[in-house]
Length: 190
Image 1: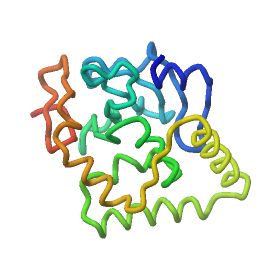
Image 2 (image 1 turned 60 degrees about the horizontal axis):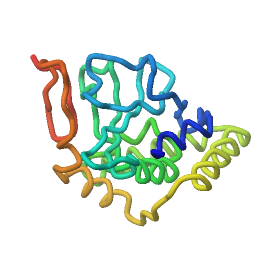
Image 3 (image 1 turned 90 degrees about the vertical axis):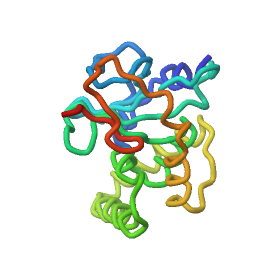
Image 4 (image 1 turned 180 degrees about the vertical axis):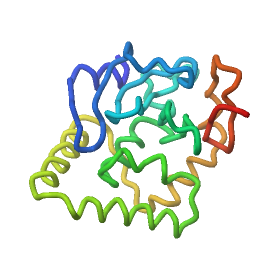
């Protein structure tokens, strides 16, 4: 059983974290989807979703990288690295409480990283008590059912994982127009 089989069997809907669970066979079959990508969660707009790209020999998918796919984003990249594995993805999502913010954190200068986190936290501070409680409930569900790693320095952790080339080596496309525009960001070429 893979980590995604376990996820789908739970039939979760974590809208509060911007994670609507999908399945292996889904409507997320865009040209920019990397070969072998396994979609598992959607944002709910513009086809934005997350997928795992299986590493060779990783039958459980627990050590394969997670990517953010944004089919309508032609400026900063349609495919962006999100986490070095599913456990890290869940852990980071639990820390920042918003999967939407995750791909924008990689490869930033420290002050920009901190500003992005502050913006996310500010947005959460404007939420109703009920919305905040729903987020905390969804985080509890994730922590109860999936391995969560302790991350004391999120900035260093994300940037070290992001700069490790092996976390990007498995990304291949059937569309020859899609090129790496910078490490971990892929877009249609010119």
